[in-house]
Length: 576
Image (cartoon, rainbow, N blue to C red; front, side, top):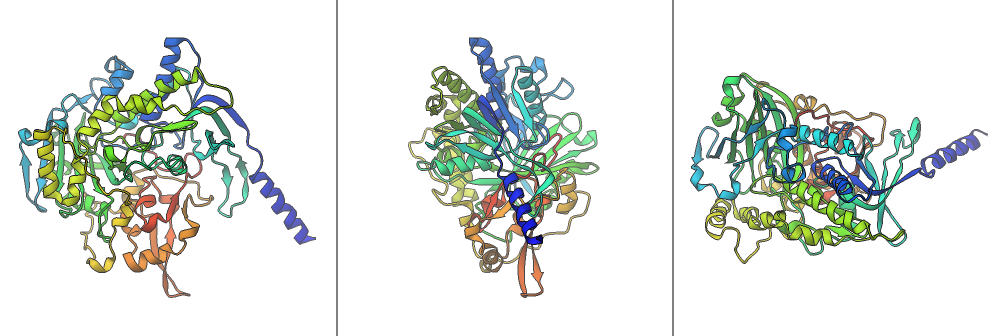
């Protein structure tokens, strides 16, 4: 009798987990309420007002509130914002006069060692890297402002509802997304709080999840959108926000560095921005195609802050926020095909970052605006039940300033694969002499993945990083607390080892000394001794995850599948 009751209970639980979803229909569903997703939504509603044809728009966002997962440098180029809202300054999009921080001083430093640096004269910096007319901002605050504008226009925004699955019709076209089920325990069983995900069906679905978005990567793979482009490559950006004494601040100062503490083979550098009234935005980016498995991007960042050219700005201050996120570094060569039946990629889901500028918000926004215009026009002639591929979006974007800008700097980053000095030399030649019009195009690493660059640990020596002092540098868990990261404890891990790569963690620790212990900026991964087997065993602390996506890129053979956790989980950034 007991076994019969257990079977009945199990059957009922399975029925609940696989029950039919409720659904809602829209003209356009947008995945991700970041600068690209919201720009697309706003532009669609602007066109509705201009042309008089109604269009229903829904935006889903995995963060608990709009802007809570947004992290960027950010020196902001307002080109696209000015097209979207010509009166953006009067509307206070980037803050009022007391907060608005235009860039006033651009500095580039080559750090030769832990104490010395060489300042590059402004005249030697290629014009494409200058920041005239740009502003130091919190991108999260701008995104919140865009969210308010979108809702005022009639866009439905649902924060806390992550897209967990792409929906396809029987012909293979995208027809929307399904939000993730909620209320499932670690054991995979439905809890009392269980709520089935909802189908959000659309004539067009725009994926605006940012770099390495889970749904975006699924459609890229499903439609083979990288067939004619390089594999995307990435950098891991780690950032802190400091509040410092006002005597340490020069509002509008922008300082970038390259060189120490990285070796000449490793692509990366730093940013340090002074924002009104008393904030320092500081960060470090490491290209994830680095070779040494003992390298820790987080630890490199922490020791970098002790350089005299940096430390002087932080002394007497307090670190108030921390976070991390991967950025696209493949550039022009790695832009995939943008459209497929039923939808398109916009923003960093496709990868429009200007790599040498380390700027992508303006290009992401513009790509989304162009997509919105193409989709709005295409839907006028839509046939019910037939998914369209809006190819005009790609054609129009290729004729916009986005492609022109990215093409002009396409060879900067690939030149650095030959080392720091070769990269700097070529960038100068391209910027001043060739002006980006060279008839050749370099490939950064073709179809190779960043994880393929990692070499066996036997070829390197472990790196002895200095201990944090608790004033300028910090251990990971202390900084993690500043990110506001939180996940529901009783849920299945959203970081899943791919079944076909189940043995990879063993290879990772034995061959590569477990690099995931060092590249993760949130201490999600660690290896512990298994007393019964005498071997090291991987432990995944998924609750620590800041949604940077680094593990899905740098793991040996990309053995982790990064999926969305329950809605609202992850960091809670306020002004990143």
